[in-house]
Length: 136
Image (cartoon, rainbow, N blue to C red; front, side, top):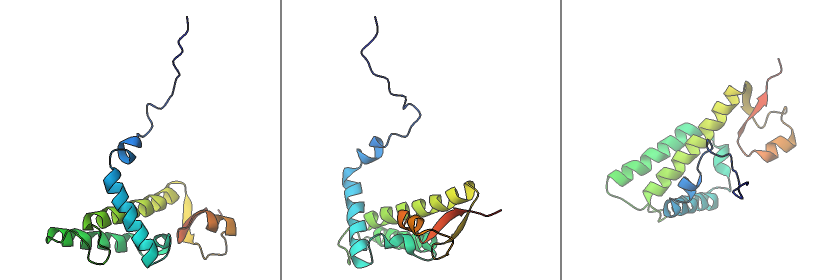
């Protein structure tokens, strides 16, 4: 006889539950940092910052140094410096991976202000810089 057991072929897929499920407090605090930044600057404006990787790494290091000097809470946001550090690390990783993916797919990296981009593409991805296929 057959089995009533279902099959799910997800053996080699990432276990996101190990991140989202195992770090609820940390992720909540990182979400609060993102909310603080959206209110202070603009919603999702972090994607449109010039020299973003360098600037977010610098911010990450500032929060790390404040933490190492014994200041646990950022005085402006009243949130932990480590939460700011984590948010900045995620921003760097996201932007870095976006750029790497562009390069790996043989796409060029150009400003969204470039007239080559369709309005739909600009709307779908909020990054200041977008990938698009090179005309060869």
